[in-house]
Image 1 (cartoon, rainbow, N blue to C red):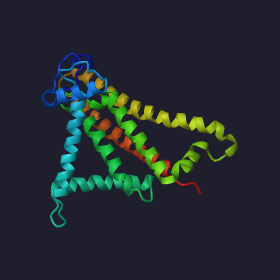
Image 2: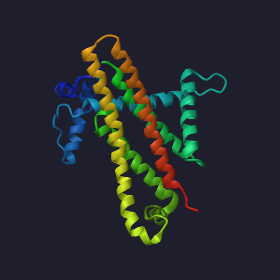
Image 3: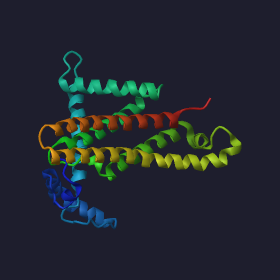
Image 4: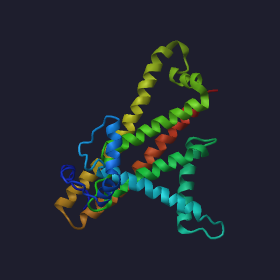
Length: 255
């Protein structure tokens, strides 16, 4: 099974072929750029680690998939890639319509990318020799920060600075001095909540599967592989739903 102990993986240099290739192609350039801004990689010979290499592979794969769909669009004879894209579009669109409501289409691309990126990174843990990227804290943290910046940006764009700040002050003006800092802390806590929820669930799923593969290497672990896949999909869906909820709250107008 590919869910190897984290300590073992950390002692294995460049365990993935894609990591080695990326370091060969872009390692020296990346080190030069990092040195210019005062950052010195722990391993200058290999500044790109396995987790980042897998994230980049997923992102590149998604871009290639959507380019393929775009270049082969057909009304009469949609190919398999187009049918899959349409199913995903309908799935995320129906969720966005229910949660965000009117004019949800402008946010659908972002929430769809969030769902696909998270679910594919989660499912990579099913491949032998690979640790789930989202079980590394920095990965869900990065996605959570992107979500945090995105919904605040559209909140400000939709309502203006003053209007958006009213959301933090609450409906009762005379206790706004108390609610405002509480709301600020609450919004910052969303980053931690999104990060820990995804990281903890995927890390626990890795550990459980690994434990049963160590104890019973045949038969029973297949059940836990199925559970890992189910957890992967559910966590990606929850992450997407929370992003939609935050967008809905940030862009809602008070009446």
